[in-house]
Image 1 (cartoon, rainbow, N blue to C red):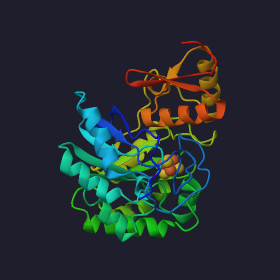
Image 2 (cartoon, protein in one colour):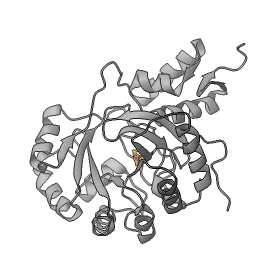
Image 3 (tube, rainbow, N blue to C red):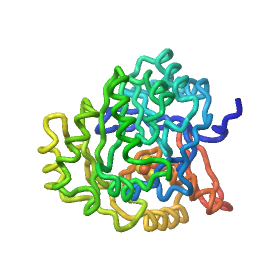
Length: 317
Ligand code: SF4
């Protein structure tokens, strides 16, 4: 079967995750291959939304990349499928999850934007995960469209139907993420609507998040902490706030972030781990961003032990 993983890094971390402990990230999908174009996306705009599922990565490649990392003594609580695109667009998802369960003892989590959960094949593929973390950012069609800017074929109705069906079939835990954006989906008068849709989804946990990293659109802002608390209180004991404004990290808009990265790389080599720690991003996101800038700017990649550093061409080592 033709796959497109050649040259892409599949495994990241492990990184400490508020939601998943020490999480070894697995990125199956090419950069910004997604069915959504969320206004808050820290990876920047989606060039073209898609709902076409394709074979991007082979199960044996994933197993070998994870094994390679764990054999070095790396400790991970979770193997987490997330990264720089929507994992359910991977056609081999079911096989990959089954292989991970067979080969490793860690719990397996999948982050998804919920857009394809209405498809039986996607729900069947997810059945081997221990935890599915779907997101729901809109409980009215217009708000959903404003926040997630989905592929034209994806509607809120389909997303809710998929989440409801997942609840009926999935034996593991569902931790639903609700991400609030100031002035877009944080109106407390809409909480009764959200409560109504949550009745059908019946998640095991509700994780309230907000914009804590440079968003796709510069004007996108997090609501005040009190608003997050208001939602958490109204949604009941399963709800918790997971947004953390990391001490020492910086919040800047994507264009400014890129400008700063270009400027820094002109002075000293940078790796994804540096960028993640300075700007409070996940390593997989930082790696994707650096990779894209390297392609655009013609930087060279230099491997030092486990890390890939980028620097302008023409500089001596
Ligand atoms: S936040 Fe996730 S779902 Fe939204 S555009 Fe970015 S990668 Fe896609």
